[in-house]
Every structure is written in C-alpha cells, then in structure tokens.
Length: 314
Image (cartoon, rainbow, N blue to C red; front, side):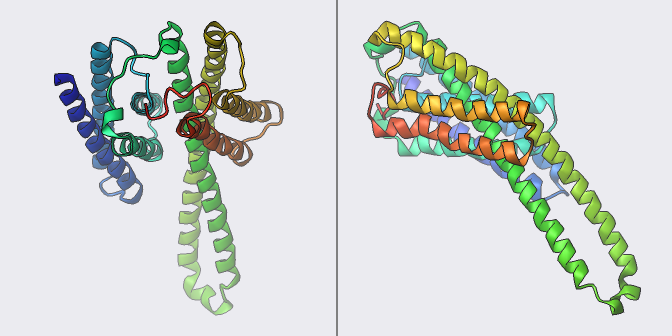
C-alpha cells in the first residue's frame, strides 16, 4: 500500500539526517574552526528529523484510525519524535551547542533499534486489542512516553555533567602533579610560558564551570517536567486499569518499575530542594533513574510478562 511506502521512505530519511546531525554535533566539539558551519548543519538536520517523524506519525494515524501507540515500534518512533522536539525547544530557549551532541546519539540508537532489530512484519499498523480501545490511550500512553523522553534527556545531561566534573578534577590533579615536578632550573626559562599556561588553564576551567552550571540547571528543569508527566501518567493509568481490570493497582512488572522510577526521581527532587544537593550528588541519582526508565519502558516489554504485554514486539 502507498502509506507503507511513504513510511519506509520517511524512516530512511529520518535515519540519514539523524546520523548526519549526530556527526555534525560531535564535530562541533572537536573542531572549533568550522564550528558555526557544523552547528547549522546539525540543527538543520534535527529540524528535518522532526518533520519526517511528524509526517510518519500523522500518516500512520490517518491510515490506522487510532493514535500510533499500539505496539513497540510505534512507541519507539513516538519517543524519537519527542526527543527531537525537546532538542529543538530547549535550543530555542537557550543556545546550548552541547545539547544535540548529548541527545542526538540516543535518537540515532532508537532509530537503529526500531528499524533494524524489530522484524518487518511487526512494524506494521495493527488493530487495537480490546483493552486499548479506550479514550485513556491517548492521555496515559502519550504522557508516559513524554515522561520517558524528558527524564531520559535530563538524566543524559546529568551524565554529561558527571563526565565534565570528573574531567575537571582529573585536569586539576594533573596540573598539581606537573607543578610538583617543575624544577628550579626551569623557572627562569619557563616562567613566561608557565604564566600563559595558567591563564589558559583558568579560562578552560571557567568555561567548564559555566557549562556544568548550565547542565545542572537544565537537567533539573527537564526532570521536573518529566516527573510531573510521570506522576499524571501513573495516576491516569491507575484509573484506566480500574475500568479495564477492576483494580487501580495490580503490581504488574511495568507498574512496579514505574513506581521504582517515580521514587528515584522523587528522591532526586527531594534532595535538591531540602538537602541542597547540586551537581555531582543529584546527577548520580538522576543517572540511576536513567537505567530505571529503560528497564520500565523497554526491559519489561521484552520480557513479555504481565498485563502490559501489548508492546512486546507485537
């Protein structure tokens, strides 16, 4: 059918441009000479990725007559769309050139997994099972995926923050070691170079400090949004479960891991607000939540057990 051909073309376009965007964003980190050119290419490619995914989802929604969230393949495409949207929105709010290099590889990995790992006959649109034929599908599933996308973005920024902190401490230690071995006979000949090196080192450390501050602030903001979406998503899911299965909570593996994820990010927010945790401490908690989100979203689905088995490659 024509819509299948359109989807195949769109997925190939999306995969190509997200790969190009990832290469461009990473190139910005290592090549300052062509920074602005690569930055424009990366952002332009991300816009094209968002447009192609939007057309893909609208196309499938039109032909399937329901929100394209009925199986794992569709939810992965929707997650990629949300991640690309977050990149574009945050970039408009604050011109952060490191955002694409942090998030774009995740979109690329999701696209590779969705298009290559999931069998072709399981990528097509399917009729909704009776339990999913509800008005709660749009609210609950879309909110949960939005929470996954925002929490993953915030956690990835926290992971980047930890890498920068470790790199900063490593440079400080190396600087102290080099100063220790700076012998008396080199003082006269090397004092000018040493001063220049100190100024350069201070400049690098200041930029790292500013970047760490930005990462900490934006990861906290994005995780706050994700936590709200996760909370509302769990509550709406409980109401839907009561209508479908006659119980608000069944301790299903997906429900249990959603609760674990909620507790981890509740600890993250509580420690930041009440204990004043910043940067390294809160970033460690956010990174643990990163793995919890993937277990909740993908790991439980691949096991194919429990009440939430609709997304297990079907």
